Image (cartoon, rainbow, N blue to C red):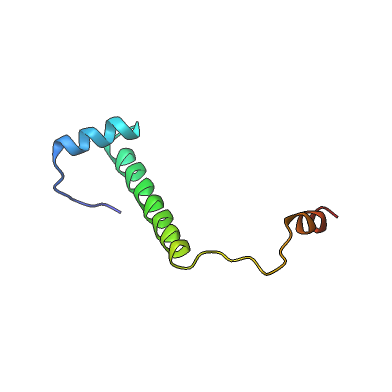
Length: 70
């Protein structure tokens, strides 16, 4: 998709230097992809924080491990 955006030159230069992209487009794609990944992880962390994982009563990791390996 072709997009026209007014982005400060200093920001573009910083993104290019940090992302090590081949060109401006590659650098912006890398930066946006990483930003989206970070946001997804942040949302998942919030979900776990809001509703922590709970183990069933009498959960035994060794029994589960043995079951999975057999």
